Image 1 (cartoon, chains in turn red, blue):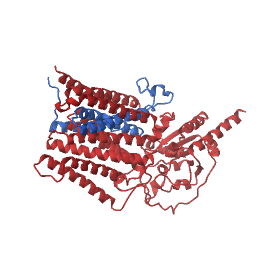
Image 2 (cartoon, rainbow over the protein chains, first blue to last red; image 1 turned 180 degrees about the vertical axis):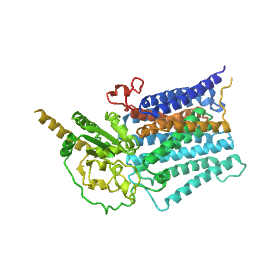
Image 3 (cartoon, rainbow over the protein chains, first blue to last red; image 1 turned 30 degrees about the vertical axis):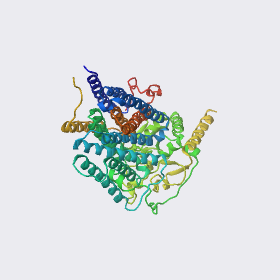
Image 4 (cartoon, chains in turn purple, cyan; image 1 turned 45 degrees about the horizontal axis):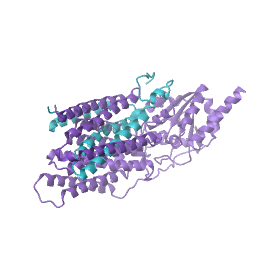
Length: 484
Length: 117
């Protein structure tokens, strides 16, 4: 056997194994019990596939042979620098910043797919028309995913504070997209057909990528920060699709399978997330939700009734059952650890404590579960909306910490409310509700919450971590007195 | 012997169809608690694009191709490594009462048999 066939055999076999490990790993990741091992399994697949990719050196084109040593050096450097920085960043970043990190890494994947397409387009091989169409399609999706993900990252990171909108933006976006497609079409025409072209091909390729990148930016800018999770999920699916298409161009089935699996899985995840927010995907993309004109709270009766943190803490100590509704405010204040400390005190005193997590609590579906788990909260104390919503009626205290829209009863009753129809946690049905909030401002979606004005609701103003510290001290103080 | 892979028209469509179906079914009934980790996990999986980047970089014959190929591997490696780091951290946290973080942190779940799901 020649070195070339050994290389082909090795790469073929490892890529096959990698595809299998990805599928098996993803399957394991879809259940909380097996999830941690799932990523490990997929990781092994990735590692062997990357190592095996060095066998390509025995199977390069004749034109590339003289450059092989430089190319291998560049490859090792790129793997070390790109992988090293991303690994370091992924390990170092705070748990609350996870969504934007996912966006960033996703954008890099899209950029890689676009770059592969660019090399193919600039290449010397004359591609067939199907090859060319697939390359361009993958490049388009990859480039949009790159620039769009970067905007999503900037929004979540707070670099871009407000949705940027202008009159007729949708039409402008459509024009840009059509323009990009037109450039792609012209590119196909000049590459495959005999013709005298206006622009030389390299310039056309630059123009194509430029348009695609601009479209990704324009498409993402008007979308509000609260919807970014859904947008990231869309771009995640898009990157998968782009990778799959470039896999076809490179005749690499592992890329095709991994990319298309992610494309489909990401699409389904997007739909699930959108459903959890009671929004359709097109609604998220095109209706510019968030930062909309303020909703008039004219019909809300009652007033805000502030109370001291210590009083609320002691009240819960003597309650039979408490359901805690955590929100982004808790995460922003880094109060998860304090919260669990407080919960342990309550549980030691015989109070039944449960966590009710709304599907879109935090900035990304499931993020609150992750944050609570990080603080050591066992996940059998954490309940999802459908499982716990009927229990609020029979619960003594609902403690809402840094959450707002997910407990807004207007979603149930007020047809004029922008979040009408969104499934919410029925915290208002508990006998007593405490809402821990930084100030009197509105939630992320900027909607007034009638719950705060209800008779059975008291407000505890302050930073979540500080409030919880006061609650802990108050309950501890009781314990000391009881012992004395 | 020739082990090179050729994929033409319909074979590609069959692969795409089956892979898409597999992805759809695998994610099918996933609980909301896993939405973010799974998004991150699938984000890691498309990091396999780094292998495609390696292919084009090693086959590069002009400075331009080398530069873009380098860029592709750089970004792809970032996608894969960062995706793994972030997903691993998220998933290491899933544990039940009575089990301490010691095992969970290492990513080996087989020693843990949680009671409640």
